[in-house]
Image (cartoon, rainbow, N blue to C red; front, side):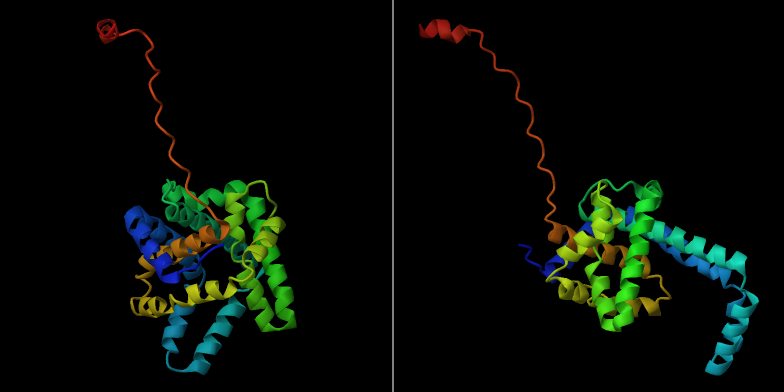
Length: 253
């Protein structure tokens, strides 16, 4: 039975974060750039209008509507969907990198960010199925959708650990794994809220430290639920026993 201890989990996550640095901060920086830069590029013409209308909510809304009308079209829609798929794959790769860091294993460095392309269809299917299931539950009411999002939160970790499982099996396993632990997961996410507020005052610079810290803690939570244990080190090989008679044996006789 998993004995959840949030303070101990976060303390251990900080230790692993320090042990994985400075490489973890480089990977986090690359991940954040890949996450935010495409949106900044696509919306680069929107920012001057928003700055000009700063302080007037109605003018800012009008500026956004004008930008949306001027930047609509099939080409941009396809580009937007392609960008979202790319970010989904990179997000999976960063999750896997932090899972390695949480286990104090070799993490593969920045290349791990793109490991999801090697298992593209399972990652893609897992994302689509989660979206559909959560959407259907949300149509009943908002709260059931949120609860199901918590229930499916371990799907990507299970998918990363079990190459023989389908996306739907990973989602089902996550739902079963999270029974009785949804509140623990919610409180863990909520415990980072203060740091997120502080990060906003640093214009997001603090996210280079905060993002891997959060994801390593999430990975540690998953390892606790799944019962993962590090492999025991192999015992050193013992030299073959020498059965030949020794000189001392003759003297004893």
